[in-house]
Image (tube, rainbow, N blue to C red; front, side, top):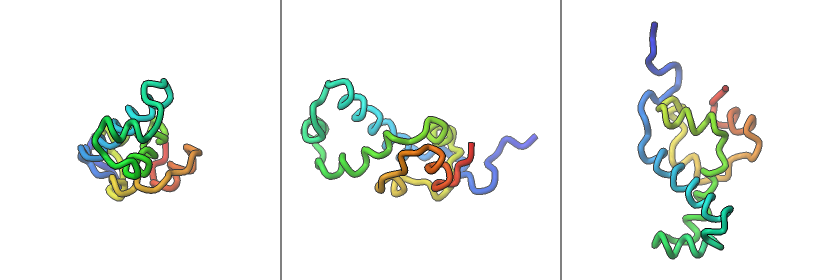
Length: 103
């Protein structure tokens, strides 16, 4: 039985991608729970540029199974931090097609 990466899977956990998704999820949670009232407030707290936060916050909108694949290092080699600098489709099926990650 082969448990290694298949096809175009990276086969390794991309720590930068995991860190980015974790940050995005944390920021999303802060906004939706009212812990932070704006991206500006997050930017000030994180000592980051507000435009940067707005640009990468899209990572919080990924389908749960895509996030799981990233955590397991099973994302396509083409799915990187750079992939999340543009807004993903809101529809999770469209995300899977776009990023080449069928269920």
